[in-house]
Image 1 (cartoon, rainbow, N blue to C red):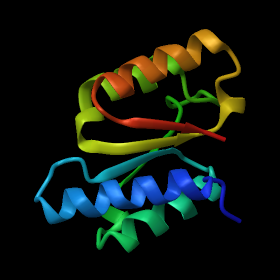
Image 2 (cartoon, rainbow, N blue to C red):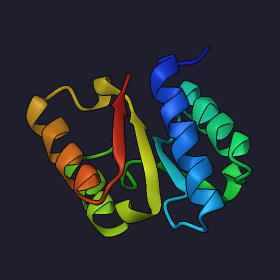
Image 3 (cartoon, rainbow, N blue to C red):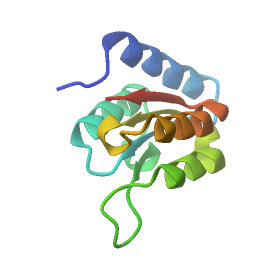
Image 4 (cartoon, rainbow, N blue to C red):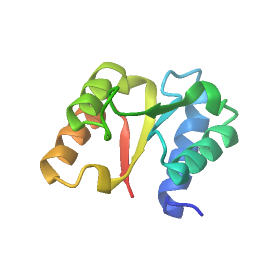
Length: 118
């Protein structure tokens, strides 16, 4: 099962392929650890672009002892490392609040990383 719409998937694939061709630095995809559908889609995108998912797929998880990834932790990651990633594919159910999603999107998009919710 693919969770990314065809148009988005094609755009992300083209972006990753162009980054590789140009020797660019935006060569990764961010997903939530345990989101199998997003991990599979992201791995396919990376492999198609000639990149190793083992090296370029960031699987972010919650803090030790917590059950869910925090919006502020993801936003902090985005502000620090978002410039290294082409996209983040995230579950809307993990961040049901529009304020949380806006915080995450602002941090990631501010660093040039596209955000796709599913």
